[in-house]
Length: 212
Image (cartoon, rainbow, N blue to C red):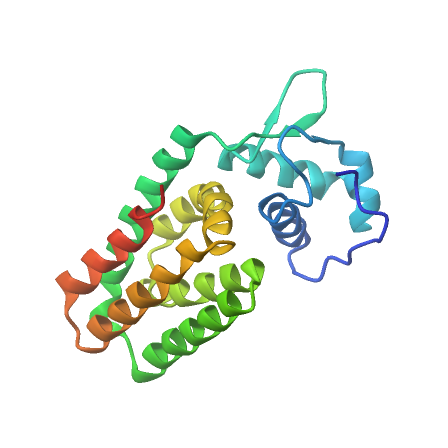
């Protein structure tokens, strides 16, 4: 679809991260569809920013596989390539397995409670047919072990490869297929609470690797 006519304020700081997040979300939720051309001038006008953070965001999106840039032409949103998604899925699954393995021993009760609360909101979002809210809740749940692990290299890998996987996840959360994730989350939380490192790490891996 064309660039929306309603301006979107960029609230996050630093500015480049806010621009990147808004453009990433716009591709994942379908505001910008596969094959659509993204011109930095138009995007800058939509977001109310200069062209510099937009260009930086487009470079990051290209590294994530969400856009492709051709020399002398505008940048375009990529199509959903099954093999590319599977490759990214495998990396993301391995990183979440590692994050859980590193985090389980350091999780506090409030961390477990935050995961449980996120899963409750995840279930409610699925019941309401709100795929975007489900994605946000899913991000929050899996983000707890990642934050507790505090592994910056791991976080950097996830930042690069997760956006491509999120496009496939959104399709799942828009259908009945997403409901199986609720039970997987519950099992993950239970194992984390009981400090079962191997069991929790295996469920974390399987949860992400279950994507087609």
